[in-house]
Image 1 (cartoon, rainbow, N blue to C red):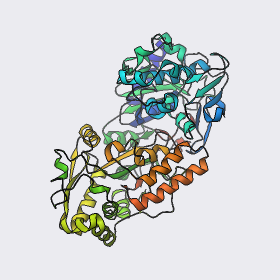
Image 2 (cartoon, rainbow, N blue to C red; image 1 turned 120 degrees about the vertical axis):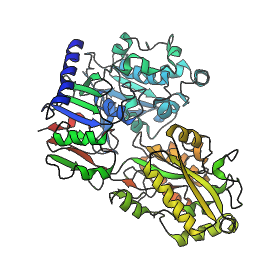
Image 3 (cartoon, rainbow, N blue to C red; image 1 turned 90 degrees about the vertical axis):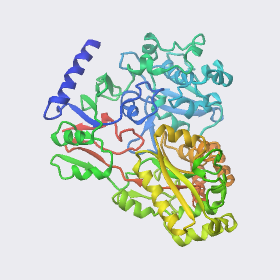
Image 4 (spheres, rainbow, N blue to C red; image 1 turned 45 degrees about the horizontal axis):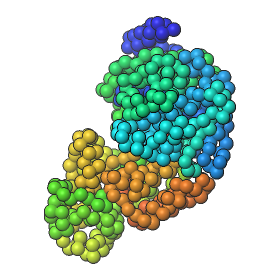
Length: 580
């Protein structure tokens, strides 16, 4: 079979390049951004996810295109037992892996334990579910620290098989009730892997004797990195630098997909991708920005799919640093509120934050930067997520309100003395650059004593400097890992969240609500708590959330079954589309 796959790969690759039209049985997608890994526990990026979500599957999955409803996947049922500490999954019977092996509880248990043991620092397992299973989010790159917090007994007890390893019941055992647990499990990092196939090819053998050998191991050098065996509707045939090829898995438990082959061509030049679409060499292409639509609109045989409600599940903002490290810091000037700098706690004053929030014109940003195709957000949460509060206002450009806030800030000293600091963005991100420069122009117009400089850094340097808490004000964002408000609210607002290492955010009245929402299992009650956080967001202005772009999908017009699920890495699953 391996030799057949290799021949098929060569034939398809030639066809994707040479045919005037993409073959009728093949879906060709021309995109950019190479895959990081085909190992679910190592991959934590959109490019990899676009392949994994079609090759592997999770126990429950999205009821596409909805993001707030899950449906059975490799499990047919789940019971929550033991006061929320045990999730008992009934597994689907007769599911085959691409290798021909049959899925059992042993595969489910091994898959989760493999992610917990390797604790890949570039992966998602430790960050998303390490605390629930092990009481620790420690990644495996620091083996000593990991072993100080994690025991084999915790690893081995994370998932158990009450009917034995060959049975079809799997118990997931967590250390505390978690209202977002099922939503998190729908992420590709928690796909079910063919354990027999993996172990036979040198991956961790699942035993206590060897588990420490795999902590923090570089999984890009291991077998599963390039050789997946999942249960999905497609299996990978070949992955090279320029393309990935997959073919239909005819023994798929849900029935064979309509399209036989899938080709992803990785093309960095947008003009080349556009030409491939226009000539019919590609069935779908990825455009880097909405402005590029003018190059393909009106092209015969091409369709631009878009709906007003197609909002991204990424949120970006200008973030204030509540406790800036001013030591040897060129971005804070003098480090004092003397007209030539700002002190460490400059943005801890709510009126400073309110003043800046009224210097950004939300609607004009949508009109000019998004060409009218965008939506404002009332808080740091996608509008499609339960808990989003649509009923609070959005602070936008209001020079009178800004002046009023700045006159109150620091007991009047800000307005009378003035300030100077530098805001940062990552080089090349013109949207974030525009956000900061709009605020700069307005704040310097408002009071000649106000100076806000703007500069960029390369991505790695930018992340490093913000992590050092050196940056007073910066533009950055977050895209959803799972469809629960916690993924954003805790990330942005929690004083122990991912962004707190960059912002030192500390808002006690918000923290009380966050802590309550973390443990309450009733989803309706949680949603009200998150809405209350949205109300506090308006009042306390901890960040300036800027509008989200309305999404679109560009295909040839003979592709049907298109839908938009922003939780899917590339919007829809291959098995759901057809080529007419």
